[in-house]
Image (cartoon, rainbow, N blue to C red; front, side, top):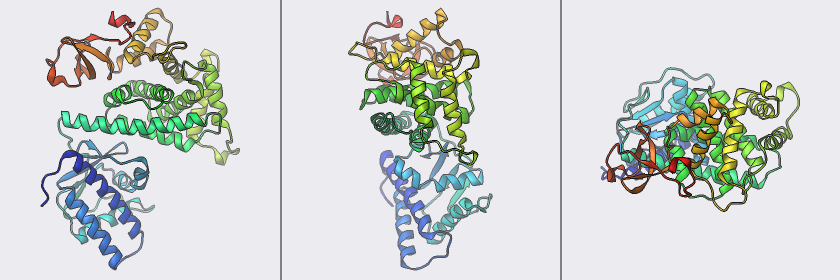
Length: 416
């Protein structure tokens, strides 16, 4: 028996188990197999499972793979190769694969066959019974703790760093035909982050090292759009189209300082979205149509616009304001939320969407800087009262202590 590994080691080993399991599926395929190649594959898979130290649950939450409640460190390329496992669970109407112990060769082969059968076009919808492993409903994830939050932060930071690099590449190709598949993958990545936690994702966006300032502001617009829509319960189909539209807007409108007006950015984004679009009803793509329709709606008269167009305009405007023209600094989240509250009070912004953005995580958004007991701290997420949020490193401060909003620039009305 292996010595008990750290959480990080177990997550790495479990990620390797999922990758190797899906590799074995490709070896087996739909045919009967035998011989040395199959034995070697099963030997390696069994050793990897032993290293992952069962018992544990593999949970699938909105496409995100977790060991118990901690997300697995699987990059985008590996994620594409492991989609058969979530697909099998979806076919069974379940979300968890629970490993009770290390499986032998016969049991591993039964598991592989079950996954292949489930994802086959005529596959079964009833999960099989296999000794040592169970298909079941989402496992109880346990209480949220410091270790779980640390791993969630690491996951969100890594996902957002990859997304920022991808957006930077899209900014470099601005004006070309829009790569729809890459855009979809970015939206899907945001959903994986939100599945781990919206507060975790939004504070990672504020605190992670910046690789490309313009790309970071594009992410800010897209994730703000997603956050407001999830908060008010907009359906997933509309939400994905809106987040994709926010990406298009940011890529085609934001500049190192400020950027194009929202209507001009929407026109440029729509031109890129429609560039090279195939003609004919058989070539129509519903997601593309929805996304393009939202961008088109931004150029219409207010009474003819889609309701989500105002949210896109507002989130884009916040991203513009984040890097004011002629200045050598960027505003913080707390500055932007203070500005939004002032505009809402004056009736200058869409009241519904402004309230959604302000109320999603309370007066102090995740990642905001605050003063707690005379020390600078960072908001981890909302607490029981508006000015008593959870803080990162809360062990050093009294739980539930009231805090004071802090702006490094000293120009936020909430910080005065």
